[in-house]
Image (tube, rainbow, N blue to C red; front, top):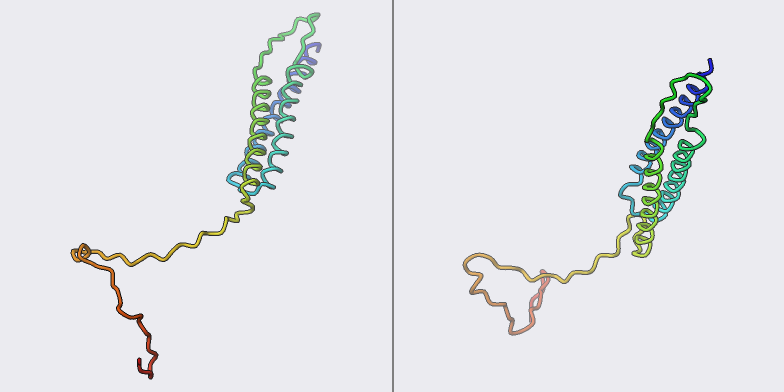
Length: 161
């Protein structure tokens, strides 16, 4: 009938909404794969992928508001009530993903400037050996040992002179 065209438009709108939701699930899985990474190259790639996903999300939101919005022909007596806030939500999420992309790129730049690449840490500083610590009641009376002459070590079978 004459109202089937409107119903087809609503079906198309809903299908694109499901695709948009699927894109969000893909994005969540993708972000879990790069969480906690300290590799600037991996983070730069992630930022690029996140930006592409964000732009796709924003385009979907704009299409849902414009070309894919169901339009009812007033010439026929059809129930054309249709409301949806989903396109606005899609555009907001797309913008948030763009901000996340910028954050990933900034994090990669900070790590690259810091010289941390692929879990390589800067060399550990050489520590000075610590003097033995005396504990117990006699510790307050302890004095450092001072030798009158340098100590000579004797190997087995030899005599000190």
